[in-house]
Structure formats: C-alpha cells, structure tokens
Image (cartoon, rainbow, N blue to C red):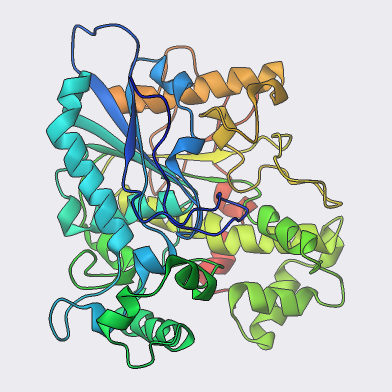
Length: 438
C-alpha cells in the first residue's frame, strides 16, 4: 500500500511550488474509485502549472473528480533548466535539437498510462489530458507535438492560451549560452553542464519562468501555425480562461514592493507586454485609468486581455475549424484566494478555478460558500462528462454551447449555476488586440 508521495522535481521554494533538489522525480500518482469496476473507466491525466519552474503533482487531490467515476493520474516533469535548457552542447548530434525535456517527460508519462492504466481499471483508449497555466500550455503543446499523437483522446486547457509560442531554437539556445556562462560553463561542454550541482542550477536559472522551444523533434512549429493549419491531434477540446487572470501577477509584484501607480502605469504596461513606450501610450488610451478604481486593476485588465483572454479566443477560433471546441470563462469574482490582501480585489484571478476542481492544501473546501460549492460540483461534473463522452454537459448543469467562430458562445462559470455568454470578445477588447494593440 502506498503511504507517501515520491519526491517532486528540483525547484527552489516559490509562490507556485515547494523546494526540492531531487532529480529522481519522474513519478506519477494514480487515483481510482474504491472497489472493483465492471468496465474500463475514463482516464484524466493532470499536468500541473508553475511557469515550468515550479509545482508538483501531489498538491492536487482529485477525489471530487474520481467520485464522478473517472481515474485521475497526476504527473511530475522536469522543471527550469533541468527541464527546458536549450544548449547546442547538449544535442545528441551537431545541430540537433535541445531543450523540451520536460515535455518529453510528459509524453513518457502518457506512454506509461497507455501501457499500464488497464491494471487500475482504466481505458487507455479514453484518456483526457488536462492542465492549468504552464500545464495548460503543455496540453496545447502536446496537441501539436508529433510524439504525442495517439496518446490521448481529449484535451482540457485551463489558462494556457499563449498564441505566439513556443520560442525559436535560436532564441532558446542563446538563453542557454547565457545560463552556461553564468553557471561557469562558458565553454558549453556537456560534461561541465551535466556536472553542475542541482543547487547551482537552481541558483542560476531564470526563476521568472522557463519556456519550450521549437527544437525540431518534440515541437516543429509555432502553436498558432499548427492550430490554424490543422496540423495537430484532432481531439475534442475544452479551452478556457479566467476573467481577471493578470490581477494575480499584479498582486505578486505589489507584495514584492512594485505597486502600480498613476505615474508608472504606462511604463508598467511596456514592461508587462515588452512593447515600446509609444505602444504603451496607445494601450493606456484604450484602458484609461479613469475607467478603473485603481491603477492596479487597470494593469490587471491590460495583462488579462493581452496575455490570456484574446490569445485564448484566437486559439478557440482556430481549433473550432477542425475539432469540437468548448470554451469557458471562470467568472466567480469572489473566488477564495490563497494569497494575502494587497489592497485591491483578486477577482477571478489566475489559478483561482483550481479549488473548484481539486482539494488543495492552500484553499480548503471550507473556504467555499454554499453557492461556490454548487459551482464546484457542476464544474467537476462537466470536466468528467467531457472525459467520458467528449461532451461537457452534465445532466443537472446548464447546457454548454459548442464554440463556433460565428457565435463565439462560451460558458460563464459563475455561482450558483453557469450560463452562456457571447460578449467575451467585446468585454476583453479583442478587436483592439487583433490589430496588434495599435
């Protein structure tokens, strides 16, 4: 009998994960309903978030999902430089691909599920891959990865919609060379890089986040290119985002002593979106401070729309041309927060839908109100209904309209009962962002 979780992958202590120096971390956890099952059960494989530099599988207790009659598998994958460092010195052959080792780990876990889940009562032909944030991005990347074809039958993407992604191999390898110099391996020899202590790697890697790259093997093209051309695994998809995604990151910056003010609003836009001051001025005109209760909320809206909402809508429009697509927006403005107060409301911020699907150590179920618990039950039923049939519409929930480019209908996840919404594009200024923000 299993009594404890295995080590999770190496990472420093951070907002999205707990410290570890273990390289022996490629484990997964299988959660199955109690008792013998008379038939093969749908399987849901969860990929955790954390910016590709943090997080662990054992933070997510899926008992509520399992109670709806599915098997849930949560996985670890290598993070940070250990999972995504691209450097020519590490290529198996001159000019060969490097990086994306964490994505390879995810594919290895999916292959394990294919070969072994039957022993737990699961149906290897009915696997749903789902994840949030970096985990949601991972699901999208596995959709377009040639190596993941046939390893899953459905996909759920939570807050993963970055369209201009992944980065080029040249850019990733340039970052790899910078890491090698910082770590004392300027000669870029594989022996030097592989001999680095884990503590050195963690100290020298970029803790703001890691990135997958177009290595030519795991990933061969940009996400937008693959989805718009139809060159991806044609499986049904749920794709969604939260109404106030970027407020979390504004709050974290505020807690670190970098608040948004009227004086620095435009420079914060420029830094957040990596645009010129001229472009930032145009964006500020579209999102004037007079429309918001505070500069923090204004920047939170800019980041939400530009980085999450409108890229997600664009991906929905591409996906629906080829596969059944169901879109949602998590809209509970009073969702419980695991983070301290920073002087403005978090709203439906990044990751705040997770306690409605899982039992988390940071947000116990007792923090949810009765209407929120009702929403949580509906969300779990929708997710598991999709895993079972490819259609996310539980018997006692509002019908979830299939997304089309014309109607752009999606499900608004609000207590106590979700409802259809069709004004997502206008709400998030997506016509403006479709023009490139200018």
